[in-house]
Image 1 (cartoon, rainbow, N blue to C red):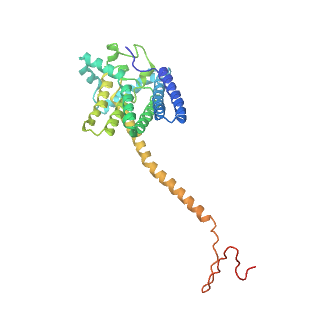
Image 2: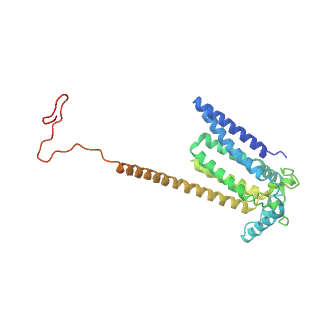
Length: 312
């Protein structure tokens, strides 16, 4: 099966090349003030940042010290927790769809190839058409993915690796697996589901930016993604729920920071005004011309070449 995603080596090299191109074009833009050079530098920087994060994610999932010894008990705990929460059985849902091989193969391709390209397409669309929203959504993606990466250092096996849950590895059945038949360390990064989190971010971006009443159809993307990752036995329901909860915390933190920034700027402006006022009060007053006593005319000001009577 062809792997349509970059390896971490390829992503890291591409990211480094993009950052180098950004540095060269940014330097050239200082000499030649063409808007196109600034645009190339900005695009190269953003693409290098995202590919660098993707390379780090791929690299972290390839650590050889990951083993199924601790990952399988954690997966078993998730399975039993879902039963206590009365969530639908992943195995029962999969059994309903397994008799439709073309649908299962389409789900396998969806899982393998669609997530990262859709995310990149969304970012390109935002950067090209809605630049005012781009930085905030890109920051959401970076923070969410970075925190997910840290959580995934605690390995959790996917449902297809858990004995006794009666889940079928659909990618292996139809020869569409990128992992092969052996063990691969990056299979143990099931919690949380980054795929579901990215799909929710894309849907929120479309709903936020677009004004058409059809924009709400974008909610179908994370719902379909959740269905795909569950039916293909790559994730539990709780993996997607955890991704949605983590993304909610990230968005809440961003909103809180955005609300705090005006208060911080107002506080800094007030502090600066108070400092200026304090300096002005401490400065000695300029000497003023002595005023004549009440009832007496003021002393005339001498003209050039003349002296006032009584002066020497």
